Length: 123
Image (tube, rainbow, N blue to C red):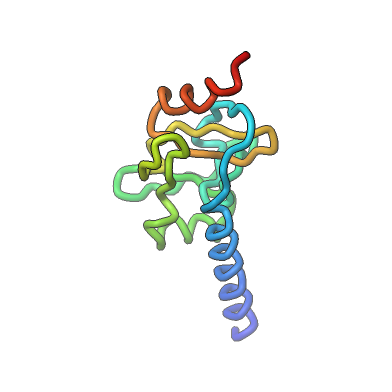
């Protein structure tokens, strides 16, 4: 039992550190819109297939595993992000989500904000 608790505590710590490190990540290059249901909102990555749906207060969030599901349910801060164009806080369940070539996702408050970001890459 102690071993399981220790592993769970370590996994939670690693998820927290990874999320903290990703807060300062800025997009690089043109982004492509992705379907919300294909994004792990804890790992901030487009997974290419439908993820586990988590219903919270009438909104649907997505995670790739049970640990992500628990983190989204337990920590309200994991359910929001900052639009890289406007700097506004957005709810991940309602955001426009776009990914870099490597799968890293970013959340925008609307299509216009994503278009404004991508405009800098037009020739």
